[in-house]
Image (tube, rainbow, N blue to C red; front, top):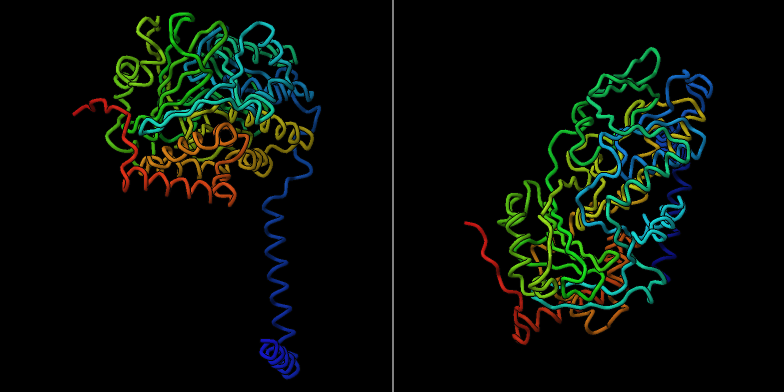
Length: 494
């Protein structure tokens, strides 16, 4: 081997000696090409150092940004902009307090933002947040594990906060920071004037607000982004919600996800709120190119939700026969950027649910909305300092949200399809939890709550044990037959 290497080096030296001119030209061309490629990439990603709208050029009746929608993304964006010294208006079509239908799970990244804003302290002081500890999931064949993750993680992976409480506290906190919160301002349109570099946003009553940047944060259906041509299709995901009165149920855990095989990759979940109240929700998660996997359709949501409460062997037992349950409500979900052409343009950003910033596997969007809102505020403050609001500058926002969580959307989409096609994967994870206990439960909680990216599954120290667990589960189920399907199939619509 040593002789072979020595001969190779000798031949290479001889070739260089005999072809010095050609080698030099080749090296120069290669170096030039690399430098040109590097310069091009730098130029493409470069942000203008100076623009046409310096600080102080804003008309007195205009804002640095007009944010349409005062949900978690819009209000967080408004808060950080105001805290950074910007003049910002946030427009809300309803009057607080107002409700929003979702699972109410606030994951770790959002908890940290709420803490930085001072909102978490308010929620805790007013008994409006319940931190989860005892939790787990029931797999498609009925294998279950409920454990405690807080001791392993050092903090709660998530907490439950009603949106009627969360949204008003975040919005009012933004107002205290200096944002101009305008309630009952239903936006009907927005136009941009190139000469002044200002948007004019119009309400249903005819009132107008002007701003240097328009931020669409008006939810999954985003009428404004649709009207402006940035949103090209309706949301494909959907979820239900029904609160269960405290003291009327049998639940003794903080949060459990249930994965009936007939609704995969969708799932049901129960989250505990303060005062022993529960949130029961059902998520239908689209997968593939054309919509939902298998036989499930959006119109099945009410049936699946109500049948689970009455007949699902695990959910009905957790809820109990005497539970006082409110009427089901539903909300649309735009997952993984579905139907959005771009999240940035000249003088424009799209954030939160309006941008489809909802995890394509879990359906969770509060933490991504808040992370994206903060990223948008940071980008806007940087643009305010340079005076440039062109696409070259607004793309800073997209680069940041992709770095924070968007890079993981492809893995979430892939995981949704894999779980649908191979439910045994979730069976294997539940069985592994039974074998390894809370340490495995904590790892799963980290990934499901965005403390770790979904690509964490691909790391050798996770992928190899999980692969072994899947093989073990396959042998137990399919070859030895030692594991039976404990999940009773509910009838699907014909």
